[in-house]
Structures are given as C-alpha cells and as structure tokens.
Image (cartoon, rainbow, N blue to C red):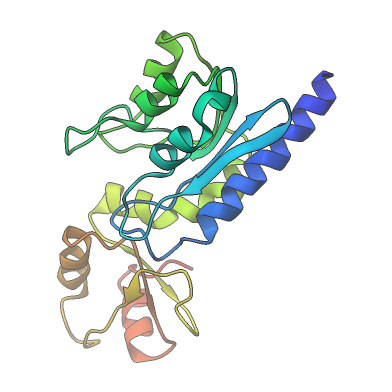
Length: 212
C-alpha cells in the first residue's frame, strides 16, 4: 500500500469512528462518546461506540468482536484509550493490546487522570505503533463538554432549539447562583447541557457561563 493510500484510508476509517461516536452524543455521560473501528487489510472487522450510560467502552466492545482478525490490525479510536480504569477493570489500552492490534490511530488525547497520555504510553511500550491527532478538529465536538467538565467542574452550556446531542436541559432560575447549580450537575456527571434562548441564557452569558 502506498503512503498516499494509507493516509486516505486513515482519514476514511477515522471518519467512520467519529460518526459512530456522534451517534451516541448525549447518551454516554459521565463518559465521553467514543468510536472505535478495527481494520485488517483494508476491511472493517469490528466497530463499536461507547454504550448508553457510558459502559462498556468502545474498545471494550470492538476488540473482542474482532476476534482473531484483530491480530496485526489497526484500531481507529476517537479518544485516547484509557490506561487505567477507576473501577479497577481492564483498561481500553489492555483490550487492544490483548487483542493483538499492532497500530492505534487516535484523534484526541484524553486529559482525564485515567488517560492523560498514559494510554498512549502503555500502547507504545507494548510495541504498538501509536499515532495521534488525526481529524482532531472534526472530533473536537465530541469532547468539548467532557473537557470543559474536567477543566472547570461544570458541564458546558449552549443554547439549543431542541437539545439534540446534549446530556440534559439546564433548568434553573435566572436569579439563582448559576455557577453552583452547574457545579452540582458536573458532580453528577453531566458534560453538555442546553438552554433555550431567553432570560436564563442571557443570565448565563452575562456571567460568562455560556459557550457560543
């Protein structure tokens, strides 16, 4: 396979992984929606997205589904596979390693304490080829709320007409302590919430709590 063909395939398969993840947006909190596509000899042998409720993770589903065809395959993952799990269960990095995947292409690095480069590092130390940053801009919408919560402790808030792709609607009095209300939602695991145009949206904007 030529370098140009490999690059074209990489973009195509990562695009598929991003589409899988987008189909689960708003259903997987407190975890981000992740897509994983496993490819062998130019053919998709397994694919998955984070399940509703946040578990099982995408890699946790795709790697076993690929079976023996995972050996020597490439995994396209929209976010860095976790290097450890808060529950103590097998990490996504280990699912890929144990399956025999030889190359992992990642769109976005995960800043959470259970990844933060640890997943990439573990894969590399195990001898897998790891590449990061492919279609990172296209994947950004998947994780903007998750990253916002990691950085601020609050879910991201946006104005929406119908709430499609959001975790929940933010309902509060415009006169309430909105920062505190949002932190409560963040503690509950929400990453992306929405409001309708109006008084509450205006109050959030005035306090710098609305993402445009």
